[in-house]
Image (cartoon, helix red, strand yellow):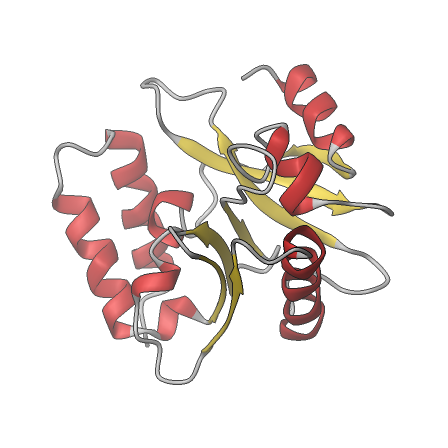
Length: 194
């Protein structure tokens, strides 16, 4: 995806594009971050579930996303910047993703317009996204299942043994693009305890 097109799509979802994060930074890669909803995190997680058929689904998803993100540290109220996973424009292989830095603007809509445009989902009222705080300490994932949409916040994933073990598994999986495996390995080494 070209950056100009990405910027336009993000702007339509009321997310201001501020550039791609350094692809060699020791950030948890989106591929690994997408496991946030399946890791037991010993109380370092927060989750909400919204019934897909709820008449106020879009408003509830937007609300259930914003409240914990503002309080758990995805962004600061005065400077609402965070990272969102997007297709990696510089990847050697397709189906890889990396982080775009964005700022939340007024009248944003993750579950409606953002999802419809493929920025925060795969169709109107079908949110799917992975986000990361700029300091790398909070992962936020939105996933829609058959009956419920879950929003999960995972704090300090680097301190979670099960999450780190998942990262080690990914580095050994040859079906995953090499640049993704390298990014996971870089993150594991940079966040290694002691």
